[in-house]
Length: 142
Image 1 (tube, rainbow, N blue to C red):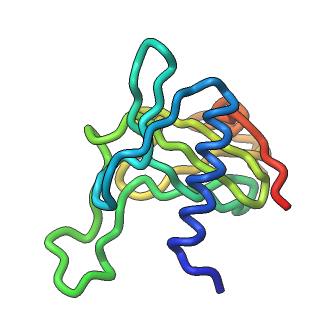
Image 2: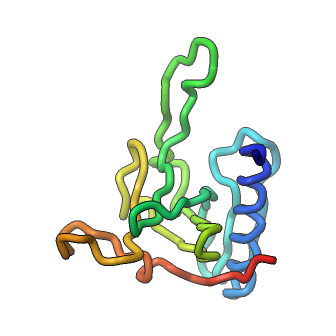
């Protein structure tokens, strides 16, 4: 079983590669305890990015939109939203090799978010986020 930190590092590297290929300047904040994993510059604006690993489940890419502190002995809070601390989530889905850039205001920041890759079984489209609308790159992993 791979260590969660290794999985996160792989996602961050894939995201950095994709953002660089899209023409963004990519900066890394100093230290482990920053809420933003990356800062990107499109030439006109700096954007704070939180990198996430998405998992393909039931036709959707699912990713967490809040940090969990439940594994700590006596946490003051069990989870913490990124609202006001980042501008976008960058999500890497290893099963698809896809990278998505999702503005924080497009998702619920209390727990997790879904990006729909396949149509739902009941064909519902209301309040559905299509992954294709957020995809910025596909990587071939060896």
